[in-house]
Length: 320
Image 1: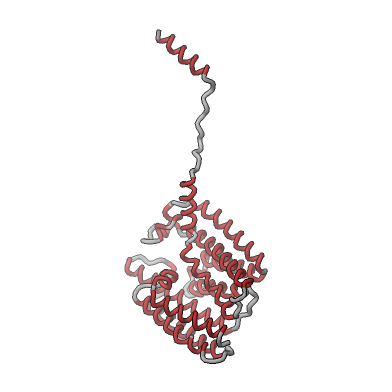
Image 2 (image 1 turned 45 degrees about the vertical axis):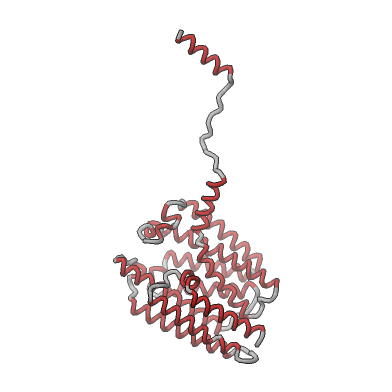
C-alpha cells in the first residue's frame, strides 16, 4: 500500500508539470534600494558640501550674481564641486577605514562600519568624478582644469602630504583656494592678488584650527595619529593667530582698494574681525574639528556672517 501511495504521489507531481526552480538571487525591493541610496549619500558627506559655497565668493565680489545666466553657471559649478569633493571623501574613507574603526565618531562612517563595501565606494567615486568633470567641461575648460587640479591635490594629500608637518595644512588650505578660483573661472571673473591673499590666510586659519581641535581631542583620548605627532598645541595656536591676523590685514587692504561711494566696504571690516575672533574663541573651547558644523551650528557666528553678507552685497550694488 505504501508503494502504491508513493507511485500515486509521483504521478500526481508529474501531471502537475515541472516545478519552477526558486530564484537564487533575491529581488531588491524599493525599501532596500532606498536604504542603499541613503548609505551612499551618507558616505558622500552632504553636510560638508557647505564648503563649496566658497565658489560664490569671486562672482559676488565681481558683482555678477544679479545676472540669471551667471547664477545658473555658479549653481552648476557648486554642484560639480560637490560631486568632486564627495568622490575624494569616498576614496579617503576607503584608505582610512581601518584607522577610522578605532575613532569614536568616524567609525560610524559607512565604509568604516562595513555598511558600504570599499569596492562599491570606489565605483561611486569614479562615477562622481566623471560627472563633476563633465559639468566642468560644459561650463568652461578653465573651470574643468581647476577641477582636475583639485582632484590631483586631494589625491596627493591622501598619499603623501598628510604625513608632512606644515605641508598637510597648506595642502588642505589650497583646496579652499582652488574652490574660490573655480568660482571665478566659472563666470570668467578675474581674481585680484588681495582676494587670493585673504582666501589663503583665511583657509590656513580654519585648517590650523581644525588641526588644533583634532590634536586636543586625541591628547584627551590618549592616542595620537602619526599625522599629528609633529604638532604641539602651542605651535598651532601661533599659526592660528598669524593666519587670522594675516586674513584681517589682507582684507582691510583689499577693501581699501575697491572703488565705492560711501563707507560700505569699510563697514564690512568689523564683521570680519568679529567672525575671526568668535571662531578662535570657539576653537579654544574645543570646537573646530568639523568647521562646517561649527560655522552652521553657532548662532552668533551665523549672525555675523549674515551681517557681513548684507553689507558686502550693499557695497557692490548700492555703494559701488
